[in-house]
Length: 447
Image (tube, rainbow, N blue to C red; front, side):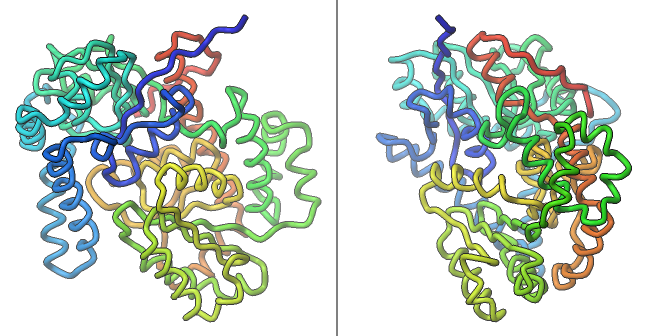
């Protein structure tokens, strides 16, 4: 009889997509196979809902205002400094709490999170939080089981660690080596830090042997290297890793259009980039050389914006074919649908959010401008692992994107991301929570 997996409470917060996306990757070990959203769960007290809503509204309003000249930039800079990540070097004690953290605890002392803590204490299980405020509140209000925190960026501010880290028992699931080392500077003891990688959804990985990811990478590399430049240089390695002759066999088949997926952030920022991509790639889409998927998240208004701009670009007949607009107002359904889109994606174009980690599934990331201090660090990490590159002007992407495809550069990034970035974070986290050992490679401490 096989071992039965222990179920855990997986808890997120509806504050952009990053925290929910991490929770989505862990749904298989979640009670009822679904995560709890700490700021919108059924039965949440009105006072808690009000406090959460104020925090989220401020963030999203300022994110959308950033492109506005002067005012938007100044507001965003002020907010960004509030949650800024300090320089790592020289190594020093960074355990003193910052203003952002002190503000969080003012809410907690007013009772924020007590209701959820009391509710879950009736069926105590390990808790995995993808938003720090929820973890702090549950510890403060006396949750009786282990509390784990999944960090959702490649580096982190002091606001991810409690006021007194030495007294806290929170345990951390770190996506990168830099986060491991940063946690130590913030005062977290080494025995409470686990280097796991980010929890990518299993549906795009396919087990500890990466069956699904390897199949998709083989197809993707061949589609992104029409002249065989990357394939010819590394065919022995590719054949050994992806299966005997898989890339070579796919290369002899008729190439499908290169699929570019552009995904906006949770606040709907940068949708203008999607409109510019539509105009630039118009002729390539018509000639079936490229296919464009525009991901509007859960926002119908952004989806409608993309549809309108597709029509303005005279691509109305291509809607649903060469141009696909995807959104789903149900957040849980949105993430499952997005996973399916990733399986057919050749290039993921997005800001360097938590989606940067998806290069670990062999998807090259084309980076839109970062929004916030943490995304600057994500950009640096993505460049270091070789899984992504910064965009040029979207108005001319029909030219420079074609050059990067013809040269095999994006195929190289797909491979680099798969080899250098963590792929099996979900499996490592499940092993820690359930105690069931899994055989995956040890992560190098890339910082």
